[in-house]
Amino acid sequence: MSANPEGRPSDPSLRPTSISALVVAALAGAAVGWLLISYSFYSLTPLPWTAAVVLAALAIAEGYLAQNTTARIQRRPGHPRVNPLAVARYAALAKASSLVGALTAGFSAGLLAWLVVEPTDAAKSDIPTVGTTLVTAAALIGAALWLERSCRVPDDPDRQDGDLNRPSGQR
Image 1: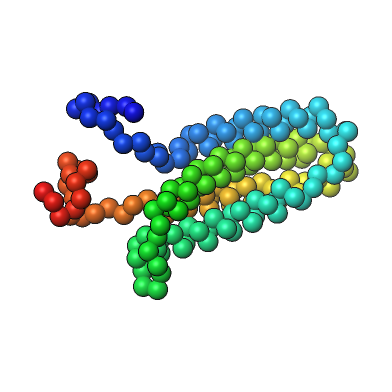
Image 2: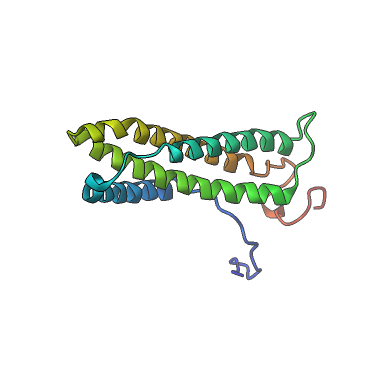
């Protein structure tokens, strides 16, 4: 466990997803997608819709979880209390999903860029599949970032900056 400047052990924490990490993942995915399709396009069968369907289902599920988790953390009427362990799992799912979405979006963008410049009919027939996969990957990134945001503990107006380790009400 690492120590903070005062010498006390610091608590492990989960940091918010970095937009720059998602951009780097998307660029890496785009490079891999471009290279892979440029060397093997003529030996491929038509691209399947499976990825788009799976990404859309994940985006819908995570959007629902985000909305539900927000309501439960804010203790809105009619919503039960939230299990803290479930929130930690949702946050981990959101971080992983945003990275997978960025990699897939980049990969799809690389494929799409190559398919657009390729003059064959086979390339033109794969454009809707790859375009839909790109859109659903972007939807997954958005839903995952929303879910991650909804897992944050709301600010307690009674606490001051130095009282982070004390329960509210104790000074």
